[in-house]
Amino acid sequence: MEDCIFCKLANGELPAKTVYEDDVVNVFMDANPNADGHMLIVPKKHFEDFIELDDETIKHIHNVAKKMKDLIYEKLDNIEGLVLINNYGKFQVVKHYHLHILPNGLNSSKGLSIDEVYEKLTK
Image 1 (cartoon, one colour):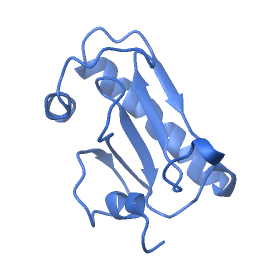
Image 2 (image 1 turned 90 degrees about the vertical axis):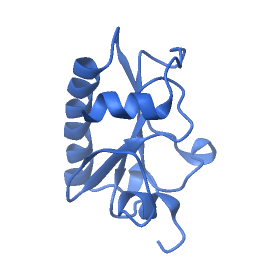
Image 3 (image 1 turned 90 degrees about the horizontal axis):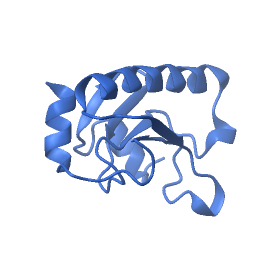
């Protein structure tokens, strides 16, 4: 989709703090994190929501989520759990499927800047 900001971010047309990338997805830091390490898994192909996703893509996204879990647990301190969120309908602000990964849950503190978290995750 031509005007989709997540298409542009996922495909490198706009800058993003990319943590992981392959042919299918781009994983980058959320610009307005709810917790240290809050990231988004975004398919490079435009899917408006989870209803449009094919089985291979959803399987791939969840396999990447497992890799991101391992990365978060290895690189960030005091991680007790993760919350995976996919908004749908009126709660989906950007109409391009994306999976939120929130370390420690929704009420986690935000003690570090996005740059500090990004550096920890990518070094």
